[in-house]
Image 1 (tube, each protein chain N blue to C red):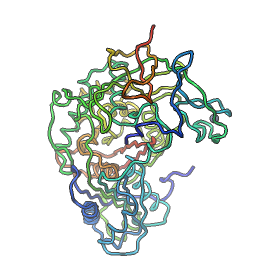
Image 2 (tube, helix red, strand yellow):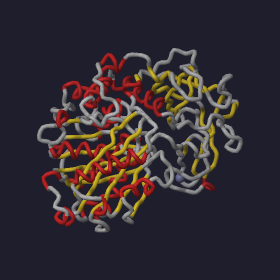
Image 3 (cartoon, chains in turn blue, green):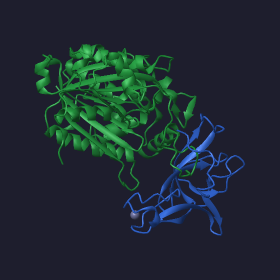
Image 4 (tube, helix red, strand yellow):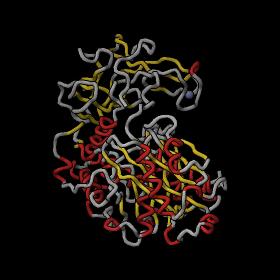
Length: 130
Length: 378
Ligand SMILES: [Zn+2]
């Protein structure tokens, strides 16, 4: 049930470091405007438009922490590590790594930062300013 | 839209199981044959009577059916393999029911058999996830549990009571993988797998088999099946993911599938005596009993603590022990639920018997997500 550990080259990066900070790369449907993360080019989950109607878009890696959990057992990944359910300010809800050094509380404002030594390819969310 | 129950009446007449257990060297063929033979004896028929078989397996891989069923005698019956993640057995049951309801067969069997050996396709979509662990079920459900604790103001102990009830029910079930009574302290204390999830609040991975034989009215006459031990299929509904805009998809699907089933049955959730729920994680039972309308939203934990969901309570919820204690070998699970409800409605559940059980509901969700619901009636 474990997904690929490292994003594949063909899939492209998950995020970019922009002047506005970290941005997650997602998709937008040019037919109906539906948006989502992560990036995909298969088709629209709402209206069914084919992949050539799907464009890349970016989401601010900012949001509110809905819940978090420390994971103590995992087949491939070093444990423990913290994960969170985050409602992005731009809409979608995602599950992502959290900064292990923070004492987390639901409702915290979170902001994405580039990966640390273990998770270079993935965004890790840390405490954002209020 | 035509519903299955708009067609010919269909009756469950035979049930059989191989006990669910931690993985062993036992061949899946041995597991499956034991369940089928038990179901044939239970129905009082022999293998040549069966016209169509639906073999539900999620992890065995290609061509599991005929290499197993040949040892019952090669009768040339129709065999199809069915896969629908955790709802595999439930879907195989629906296929068998549809086969009889439509008139394509008078006697059909749904068989669930599994060992945790094969791969799972869902993560191999070519889409890179935001984190490489987001599809690990216990991490997802730890996040769901923590969110429920924070937003509904529930305590770990209130959720733990689900596990206590289901482990104690499983202790009474000879087919259950976990047959040990548990205290609240045992199910809520560290170590935690993730968040505050103790492993006793998570279904164990296992193997096993379950089989259910269904018949038309004509076949019941022809084979002189004991009508007092047959149970009618009163509703069958199944849905997959829709654009729910942020709602918990498993909960929204459960609402949709149970509502459709209630309409087909023509009854009300307050009339359900026995309910087998997809409780792969303890938190799910509270979310789903509320979504099904067994109690008002937010009242699940209070009703549980009052004993409303105990055997002998208002609705016996997962008297088999549920996925938490009876186990969840995937292919068999949904059929194990049908077997438990049938046993309950026959009044043959022994120490687990819900008094005067007349109607039961079986509910499974699976990766997709998908949701399958059946209602059986005495
Ligand atoms: Zn669209």
